[in-house]
Image (cartoon, rainbow, N blue to C red):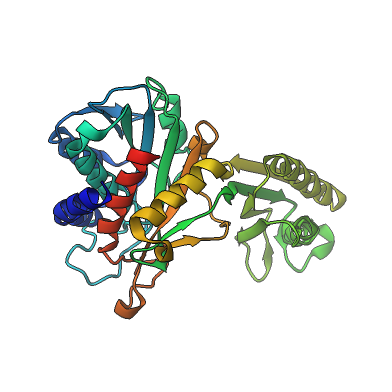
Length: 388
């Protein structure tokens, strides 16, 4: 069966690469994936044995393939479709045509990969026991989460998957390799917004002022001890804006940052501590602080048994030397919502190629992939869907 899947991977690879380039050249931002969604649905409708449902959670597409062997088993496979607000700087024939928009996180790869898997499994439907559910999801990059919306729309019901699998590109891994990590794999992600209010005025009249800049500085120092280097977590602020001048102290200062951690109980505790510290420091300095914590994605937890099995299947399919044990990541991913509902495995697809100079990181204007990775990826995910 592995040889048969590899033959089909080679057969469908040119079409998958063509689809990837088409999606890459026409990126759409979160909740705006109208044409991408249509392309996905149109492609799926050409595949024998596949039922297609559109308009799920606005732009989502769900496809259902019932294997001819029957049975209650259900496996779900997920891809995300949205792009990022980045101006592409690559000189390639399939460069983004949409100014200020780019598939800089590889969702074009994820989407075309899952379409390729659907092509292969459609042809192998006589070998499939149960059902395979293909989930094409909007808005991974932006809160509110597309994964959460898809779950609320019922994609994990009728039938409910026994397991769910997804992948993400990794330019730090060479094309043809795969990375796995069981347990807590990717961090939760929350956005922290602080508005520090004081009393502004002429900078020379310090006796009449309550400087929100000084209060903000004290808040940042007071929050620093919350970051424990012995615990995998991040509390970091990347923006501070006062809109004053050399001789003008503003009435308020706004700060924005991120909180990442791997423990949901710690996450709740940190929310409380951040709020208490910010408000306490402000009151002590005769000001006040408005704290807004926008709760984002939860911790992504790979089921140990499912992940170990998927890793074993990857070793069978790609060879042990091409399957890597990789560390946890402080980045976040809304696939995490699925992992709290269904036993899951989210793995990494190597797309880099040092020899070809394909090394740029995700979320950069020069991110690109070695497209040969797609032939490996559609094959492995098909194998996992059959045997996972």
